Length: 263
Length: 265
Ligand SMILES: [Zn+2]
Image (cartoon, rainbow over all chains, first blue to last red; front, side, top):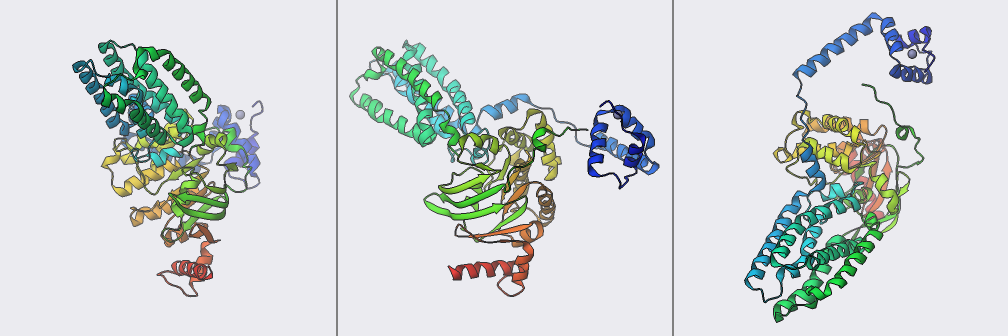
């Protein structure tokens, strides 16, 4: 940037001299972009018709600025919500929260029966996860699915949102029922991790269906029929859930790249 | 305003063909909708023609990386799409308008285009200007802050085009972009297409032969998931002068090619 443009070259540039080839023009323009002195020089040597044209453009731009649309105020919170939340998830999340509250009410009325809150806790995040990545429930699925942030990143963002919505009512219900947090939190995290892990192989929607269905058939249905407390939600199974949650989370993180392949 | 050209933009393209398929097979449900397609597309505007059920939409979905190929090879900008690591950076250089443009009704036009720019990982600082430019190019400047649910079908189609071009994609895929546009908007859209085709590879799927003749530099004709013919629009028109079914020479050329292919098969 030490050498300024020679006056002759600048004059040739302003008149559009055909002797200047593309390389020379490019060199001059790159210099002009960064050098106010040469820009001032250019303005001084510009021929009359060009300055008149520039004046006209200036007037038009000023008029456009005065009469054109006002700049819009950016609403940062709306953008944040767009990037994290998914509007099609709302009905699911409302349903799950309502189910937790209903289970809590029933547990209060029938304390001798197996706790519905604890039976529901493992699969509470799964319905949201299934719908968050379903072609049917997300109207913009085809637009988002082929983008850079699709797959892994959006899945993790949406999982975080689902857990943030589902866990507080579970915590509240668990606390009011006097159960140890390990019995609702660890199963919920274990099943979420397992859905992510299996989802990398067979798709999140199918994984959520398989895991949620198995839990219902193997644990929930027998418990409801026999009214016996399943061993899996007894305090004695806490160490097992700790291991399951830790191993599940570790495996899900280890295999997280599986979601990149999924188109 | 002066904008410095970035290194990435100046880097020479190392790929001869932005889109390259070899014996590509893609399923639509259980049915093999693209069945052994060999195709090479360079920079320019390519019109994808074919009868209903020819596999056009399935091909577009595979090229946009929404649908995984079930066989053969698909390379976009020199990258194999089955390579998981390459997929993320590759996707930031693609643009796609699906046939059924699903959208979030509460978003405004600007918010929606901005959201897609973010999804395609544009640099943060470039997004507002790119969004404004995309909205201007499709002629929606005065509706930029309207909610999507308040827009007509033709306007929504234009929002769809804006979201597809916002990141300045090197490969742009438009599936039936002119549906719902009135004749004047179609003419404007053809001008936009020719502009976009100057430095990127644009593939436009359409059933309107006239759109292809007016705006495309290259015609790709497919039937039953395979390539039938590829050539310049003038050749299509020339073929049509020798007979065939249709209102225009290009349409007659199209029907002749299709009939010849089917009788040969
Ligand atoms: Zn200078």
